[in-house]
Length: 262
Image (tube, rainbow, N blue to C red; front, side):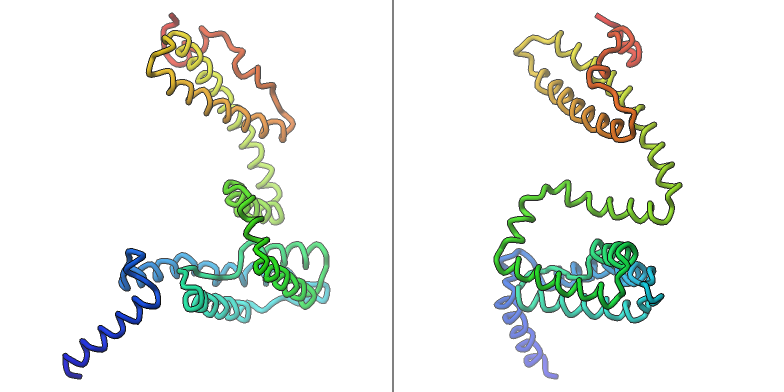
């Protein structure tokens, strides 16, 4: 192919990509988007094996399981097609794939606990999809998602992991709880020293001292950590009152941190 014709085709392709995806306005290039897509694909590849592993782990009342190869193929096909449609129709660089939370609910709750057959469970998923579509079209889903704190959204993945451990290895979960309680008591002791020394240091500074603001931030963060630890200890049945965290003598607090008391 002559160089002039090839350059003209490359220029036409570049104009089409720019007009379609507004790469210049978004401060990106074709090469950047290709690298980002490759990274996204590598990050998401675990779903190819995890999704069929979860869905194929639980038999229904009839003793039937979902075949691993079939679920793997559907996982790849649905993720690929939907991700391409997302880019072509909405012009957003979002990759779509089966949710790791939903598949656990279907396998362990609908089929495992509620004793639904796999056709019945998949019918529930179909109806759920129709309901989600209705919520999206009415923008109610967006309002609900905005109302949920980011910390709670991130905790969902951790909760799923803990649930899987509890269902398969209850003894490990009990050991993890014992370890967490021990760690909470250790943090309790550390916070006692931090709060005591921070309050004492704050009392030695003049009201206009520039260091007071930083010490107050230390105290505020320690108090938040104290509430979190008390919730953990209360949940384990070994709760302590918040006042007990700062009840130690000041001399012991200064000795613990190697500082001579004033």
